[in-house]
Image (cartoon, rainbow, N blue to C red; front, side, top):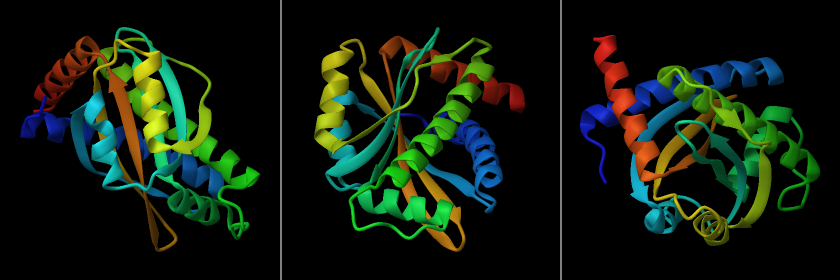
Length: 204
């Protein structure tokens, strides 16, 4: 399934609203101006997510995972490779990284960033659809990309498509790229896209 140019533009516009809210929260939390950009959005069958993401992140990744439920339900993940995760922690806390893949402080920062970003985006979808979206407690996982995606396929058989959002964090003259992945069933994806189209039509 491919998004049309109009659907893609509308989704980017909508996600930018959520990212704007998340950036404001992160700026307030850290005392640094944080800008979050949404340069790209694409949809892939869940079986093709591994190859789609492997071109942009290394195999060892940190992911913050939340399950959301409601009329649109699925899994949302923020994925960063270890280098990007360590850099983001350093930029947000002013603390130099320890000589570990990801220390306890970095894990705490990543979980909070993931929680803020995922809630802001999914909350924006909920407002758009005028429905209540419920979230699970965010879980931080450090594992291979293939293992994280495999667990999604095994545990949630009804999920079929992944919405991949390239998210750029800009702060203090540096940029870190992460990837927001929203995994949805066919029905949830269809409902979301139809609602996005209706929202975009109402904007014009």
